[in-house]
Image (cartoon, rainbow, N blue to C red):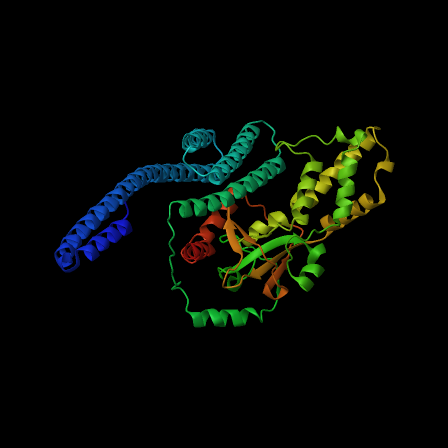
Amino acid sequence: MTTVEITKIVLGVIAALGGGGAIVLGLSNYFGQFLAKRYEEKIKAKFQNEINEYQSQLDIIKQTSIRYSDKQFEHYSKLWASLYDLKLLADDLWQQASSVRLERFSKQLKSTKTEIEKASLFIEDTHYKELTDTIRYFSEYQIGKSNLINYRQTNNFDEYQVQQMIIENGIKKTDFEALILAVKANLKKQIGGHWQIVLRPNWQSPAANKNIAARHENLIMTEYHYNLDIDSLEIFPEEIYKDPFVVFHGTSSYHSESIERNGFIKSRSPFNLDQARELIRILKLPEIIAYDTPSIIGMTQAQSLQDYTNAIDGNYFRLSFSCLSYQCVLFSSGQSKGGQAVGTIRRAKQIISKAITDGIATNAVISEPVSKLFNLIENIENAQGIIYAIKLPDTLEEITLELNVVYSSQNISVNSIVGKVFLPEYIEQIDKTTISKKLSDKLYNARGLGPIINRREFNED
């Protein structure tokens, strides 16, 4: 019976009783309130039971979520610590490729792999993929360093091959360092570690920055005579090389007209890429391919040249500079004059010539485009070596420091070139260990470019 029906009955009784209805009315009010209160308590009890049930379910979900988040945080923390330890050992191995350091690196690599697999249940799928990709780059770096150590233990190793192996290992190291930065950013987001550190560099005021920028727009390129300071290993005057924002680039003077007209353009090839692709085709011919054997780093000349053309096509080939002017002598003379890709073409020419000399191939395999390419490479090789001094922008925008090499991801204006030196026929030979130490000392002293770039990167993080 509903409340409405009860009310109708009560009112009917009151009407029948007439004057005595007042007493009944009082009783009806009492019983009405009593019934309404009981009904209200019944509804409240029902809702409270439902609320308690939902609360219990929420508590279970909350506790499960907290336990999962805590476990996830624990695994992410362990993974980053293991990954960072691996990076430190990779840096040690880069500084000195020795069997002892390789063994330490290999053990840590195995440990980090295990940590990733143990944590795979608790980490996000995208992060798992990034971490396994990072491990793959580390593994390739491990193989490259192992090959380098083994090759150096041979009696008659080729120093040029050693340098090629070091370059390839440097590329692998750059790859995993870039991926580590991405992993770090994603892990910080995952564990809720969002923060921003704002620092203002105190080594120069905003007004000083403005003045430097103004002077930068009016720089004048000056030609200097080659004059090696054996103590500093610098070939430019002090006012040039003591400026931490000045870096150097060595090449063949064959490129000087283009450089002094357009500046340094990233991802610009010194030769025609279609001619390079034609050379790759010839290297893969049945009569030639057997001569193009993999180098100690495991790549044929055709593969190396293909990688280079892909990098240029993809527009991710950066400009590279050194903070030590004498180091650029290595890249503006000898086998490396004109760049690594030019050296690859030189070796490709030697391969084809050997096949022709052996009677396996004929001169007809050298097509007109490749003949033009060979002539260009010869002109680059015969031209005088030259080293340019470049003033970097004080903002250091798109400038990074990796493996003691300064990279620019944007073009360098011709107005930034402050000087040049043509190399003489005779150049003093300095051992590479001395050069490397002098470069590190210059880069990382208190006023060097290294600390300036590191402070900037720390500020950006």
